[in-house]
Image (cartoon, rainbow, N blue to C red):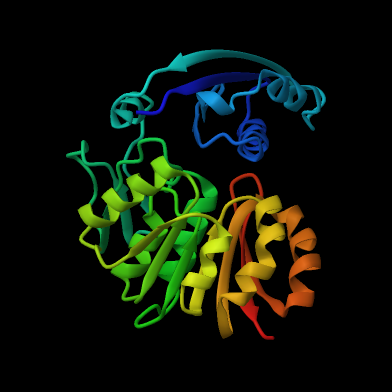
Length: 284
């Protein structure tokens, strides 16, 4: 099992905005999973990737100047990550009144049209973060029957699983982190969706996948803008693209890269502290 560094960050004053910004900055630095609470958040990164100077730089350049930040680290040996998530209060969540997300250790949760069981281990994506729930809501409003889907940066596989449950086929999930890819494989099987193809890799794997009707990427702004050309090459004309992992203020930056590639903004939605889901149409 992989060993991780647990980075505990507390902000004064504590706020959801401060925690969201910190999570976004840490995600850019390679942190994989985040557990927010009323005082800050706990973030996890593989032990060999931890860089104390990078943490100090993030704190030094934190964009909320009146926020005081303290942090500590702890080495977490490879273990049962379901236990860690249960300890940190991963509770069942209902998204859009139609989709319930829970873990296998939960026994008391609401019944909904779509029931997804996620054991996240160290993979990101339980539906609790605004970016994940925004895409879930978008998928719930779309006609997915018979549509092909690619889920880039699938994490736990939650978005790919929902797409398959709603009739999408074929569904391909791509994940760069080996541990998360294994976790996604486990989750697609446990949710009765073994036909989902899970691939280990990044956007360079897209040429191996047939062109798709719907493309999902819940990652972060820098990765998305860097890979938009690769995304475009994987799309059928008229394809729909759902992007999240960034703030509403980032949309013009993304569109600056996306527009010359043939992407047109169809709509966007916002949740929480201005987290956004951008819906694009591909019109080459």
